[in-house]
Figure 1: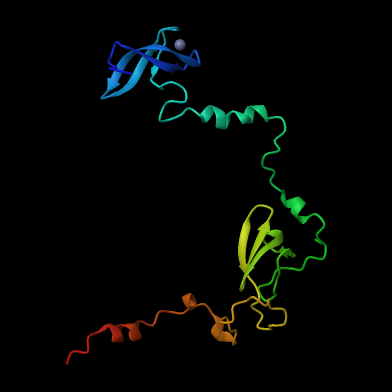
Figure 2: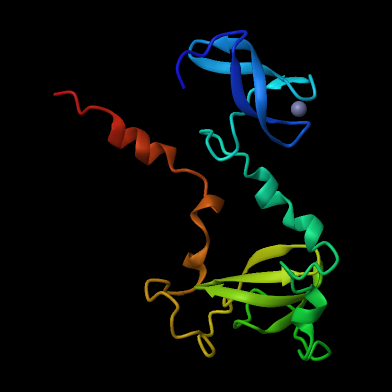
Length: 186
Ligand SMILES: [Zn+2]
């Protein structure tokens, strides 16, 4: 590989012939060949180097082609349908969702808005529920009756009555913060 220059010859992958063939260099940018003409088919195309030798190997064909090969069997990624997930579950006796109840993974509940849902995760007072069209995170265990609370709920989550309200619902105490942020000025 000595001097490559416009008008010279170079072996390159021809996009039409689909093989490595002698090409005439049509354009170069610095030391890089950017455009060539196939000596075999006469077609102009971007320089792609010889197969397997370029810094950008044309392995898109290898990674994307299998779709055509295995197109009839679609066994690659089977997503378990919502109905399959609910198969074997006792949907008929699924309890109505209530934030006061406590749920556990794999439990089926009935939500008044979203319909039948499957509990897929429990994180403290939150439950992830998979519904037919969506996945929702809802609260549970807000009844204040720790009868059925999961053992792994965080111990800091003390439910001591009405003080359990989220802070966001409370108006910001501007007086207090303003007072503390002002310099005392002595
Ligand atoms: Zn060609």
